[in-house]
Image (cartoon, rainbow over all chains, first blue to last red):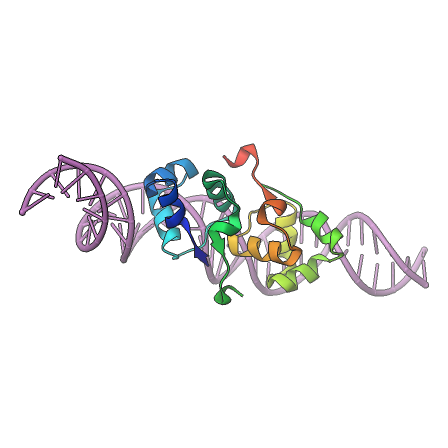
Amino acid sequence: MKNTIKVQRAIHNMTQEELAKKAGVSRQTINTIESGKYVPSTVLALKMAGIFNVKVEEIFSLEPSDE
Amino acid sequence: MKNTIKVQRAIHNMTQEELAKKAGVSRQTINTIESGKYVPSTVLALKMAGIFNVKVEEIFSLEPSDE
DNA sequence: ACAAAAAGACAAGTTTATTTTACATTAAGT
DNA sequence: ACTTAATGTAAAATAAACTTGTCTTTTTGT
């Protein structure tokens, strides 16, 4: 899974910690998701999309290896 | 988390087993997600959205208890 | 260059998602 | 009423998400 969290954070001028607080998770969770180490739950994906005011698809997208 | 999987299946005239096969998971996984027992990963949510040709937000939505 | 803030990384532990197997219930067609 | 397909449910086992804590590295501002 690819993601555009870093870009979205830049657009909204937000640190990992700020995003983590808004999303209700730890900073490390944001960090590891952002670096592609694991895939978030749908709840967290929806929360992030809400925070950035975009659709989930604009943040997360499937890759060939996900199928 | 609420979901509209049952409705989407009805629209596309698809059984849980067919959806499961298309999404690459077990029927029970579809069943338990559909009945709200747990939340799928973002990969699975994106796959379902792709199968039904809608955005993730049209299938899954946050509830007060998710925040 | 220095200090502070932000980000990256890693390990151990807890919680939650997912699979498998198996059985019970419901719905639909004949 | 009978049969079959579809769905609901549940326990046990495994995999993956998430937390907490800590330490290192990079970035940014002065």
